[in-house]
Structures are given as C-alpha cells and as structure tokens.
Length: 446
Ligand code: SAH
Ligand code: SF4
Ligand code: F3S
Image (cartoon, rainbow, N blue to C red; front, side, top):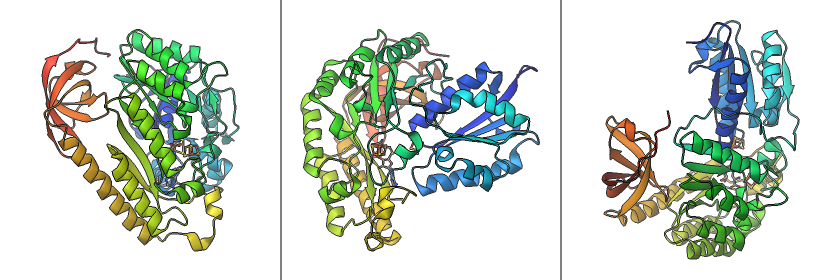
C-alpha cells in the first residue's frame, strides 16, 4: 500500500552492473524524498528509464521502450531518462521525444528529487555535467539483490579504447575513499549479506590517493562477515604484483576473474588501444593462475572491429582455446558516434555478414570450451551460495566461488545460505547438483 502523502516511481534499468547500482542509489534517494517504488509503469507518478549506450542495439531498445511508455503512462506522470544514453544525447533527447521531460546523466542524480518536482510542474530539463567529486556517499541504496551487494568503488574511465563510448558517458575516472567502501561493506553485512562485488570500469586501477586496489581488497576482505569478495571489470594492465598477492592472500576473494580480452590479435588490440599485446594478455593470465589455484576466467570479446582480417579473427579463436575461458560475452563491433574507431578508413569496415559469421564461430568455440571444462568437473564438490529460486519450481539457483551456476533442490528458506554440493549434471553451461552437507546457515536477509 502506498501512503496517501507519498508518490510512486517505476524504474527500468539497462546496461551494466554500474547502472543497476546507480538505479539502487536513485531509488534510495527518491524514497527519502517521498517516492515508493512500484513494479509497473502504469502505476507510477514518475517513470525513469536508466539507459545504456554501449552498442547501437542497446540504444534502439531504449528508444522503442520510451515509445511504449507513452501509451502506458498515467496522464500526469513524468517520464525521465537517466544513465549513459541520457549523458550522450542530453537535450537532443528532449527534442526527439516530446513526452520525455527529464534527461539526467550519471553524475546528476543528487538533484533528481528537485528535477522530478519541477518536471511534475511542467518543466523540461536536461542535466549532463560531470562532477568529479560525486560518489553519492550520503545516499542509502535500495538494494535489488538480497544475497550479494554491488558496491561501486570507482566511477568513470581514463582508458580510451577506440571503440568505447564509456569515457564520454561516464567521464573521468575517480575512486571512492577506502574508508567509505569499508563502511558500506560493514553496513551490508549488518543487513545479512556475506558477498560483495566491487564495481568499476577498470576496477583494479582503483586509487583514492592513499590506497590502491590491493589495499582495498585486503580491507574489504577483512570486514568480519564477508565470505565472498568479487570485482568487475579489471583491466589486464592494472594487475600489479601487489594486487595479485592481495587476491591470493585474502580468503574471501573468489577464484574467478572476469578479464576482458577483446581480441586475440596484437594488431587489432593495438588499433583498439587496449595497451596490451596477445602475449601480454597471456602473461597476465599466467600470473593470475600461478597465484590462485583453481582460478576460473571469463572474458569479453569483440568481433568485426575495423580492419580485423581473417588472420586476426583466427588469432582470437586460437586465444580462446589457448586460455581456456570458462565463459565469454561476445559482441559484434558497433560504431559509436564520436569514438576514434568511427574515423578509421571506410575500407576497413567489416561487413555485417562477415561479422555475423565470425560471431557465430566464436560463440561455437567458446561453448565447446565451456562444455569440455564443465564436463570435467562432474562429480566434484563445491561450496555454493544459494542466490534465488530457479525458474523451474522447487529448485534453487546457487553459485560456486568460481562463478558456476548450480541448480539444486531445496526450499526458498535456504536462500542466502551456503551449502556443499556435488556437481551431478551439466547442460554444458550450468550444473545440476545435490546438497551433500549443509554448512553454516547464515541468517536469511528479508
Ligand atoms: N570497462 C570494461 C568494459 C565495459 S563495456 C572493460 O574495459 O573491460 C563491456 C563490454 O562491451 C566491453 O568489454 C566490450 O567487449 C563491449 N563493447 C564496448 N564497446 C563496444 C562497441 N562499440 N561495440 C561492441 N562491443 C563493445
Ligand atoms: Fe571502455 Fe576501455 Fe574504459 Fe573499458 S577500459 S570502459 S572498454 S574505454
Ligand atoms: Fe552501458 Fe553505461 Fe554501463 S554505456 S555498459 S550502462 S557504463
């Protein structure tokens, strides 16, 4: 029930975990200003679409969704666009979609309550200034996930990968103070959670001026009650020996790293301005694996980058086999306005047909590798954290420390607890398992 003096907000989130985390902050801020969350746009006084601009397709989905909202929103409801597409397009979005009255970029959420109030009185506004001090420290996020907490530790990005829009939409890199991250970690333990995921675009380049990412891992991992510590996404060049040692020494740090490779060809990597070679990437993988036994590795890969030859693409396939990734997100290159990759000679453009074929072959190669590795794990035992109900009734979805999904039978009351399971079957990507011995049952967060 919504109290009569309160208004309602509906938020829809696209893009990466950073956006999900921002939506949690936005809802927390609006709750403090009298807005309760509802789960349908029809029921909301304020509708926010928190957007992603990473690929053309992501933006098209949002444009389609904004069109739909027009017919679904209440007559006096206000529609706002936040996030990366809001930052990229700014006032142009107000021109393009007359039923949108608010456009707010990732550093502007502090003034959302005011902007929303103005919009409800008829104003239309766009706010896209960067604020290098902004970390929303005083906001209390309204967390969507009750089992693990996403904690942003860094905003923005100082790399300039030539395909990427993020430096434009998120601005320069800045890190939160270590003490603030530890404070938030302590608070999530008090809420009953024992897993945290530290977020940043190149999260291991974290520095608050006094501490680096190694210090941060040790400090967060040292918070009493934290049993699992993950982070995403690191950049290969920022894995200093100090960071790798801190990972190895900190019990809570899980045996899984998501390490975006993007390409297995040194020449493509160079044109992507990734700042490492094929061999440099392999070397990073070797250092991580030497330090952390049983490490699983996942990655991001782009195909069809301008100038990618058949040989370059074959190098990517061979790198996938050589590293032996446990899984990968694979993408067709999508030109983003204003990025250096769009200024490469037209003759270097890869046709959509070729890019699609390459994507298909890459997906097959990744899947075959995942399947082989997973089949070899059958019969092994793993500790899992039970995360949520599975889609099929009577089953629960759990996760191993090395980031594998296991479906186990059980009651919803087990969500938030740890169990030991035996891996009994695999679809190739996910596992089925049986609980072999119930370990410490942590309190279930409600
Ligand atoms: N900061 C992270 C990546 C964030 S974007 C990192 O550097 O690892 C997530 C992924 O989207 C990237 O790793 C890349 O694989 C993909 N991506 C980014 N821009 C893209 C583009 N223009 N076209 C296709 N894929 C892209
Ligand atoms: Fe984009 Fe590169 Fe920054 Fe990642 S490191 S966000 S891919 S510019
Ligand atoms: Fe998308 Fe912005 Fe994340 S462009 S991937 S929501 S940083």
